Image 1 (cartoon, one colour):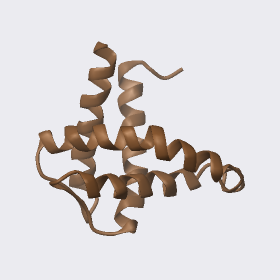
Image 2 (cartoon, rainbow, N blue to C red):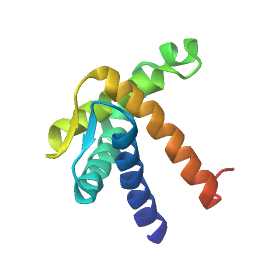
Image 3 (cartoon, rainbow, N blue to C red):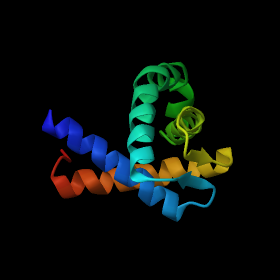
Length: 115
């Protein structure tokens, strides 16, 4: 349970960092980032999983880079549900997804979760 809460807080922190680095990607407050991380996680587990299964051949052909497109789409969709979380364009969502993946990878590395 503690690990789940820690991952949620770190995901929100990662969204705040992305909002500072990527133009067109905006998160108002830490509370907004917490809500956005929750919605993004729920959408990623449901809709994201279905999209990843359907687009598996394209993902294989692009050596996994198409997953950034799916994550960008899910991020942009999540921004429609959370007030105070705005993504101006799909380009910002795509770059935000890439930066978010790198930041979360660094967090996992620092916490010793990498296997």
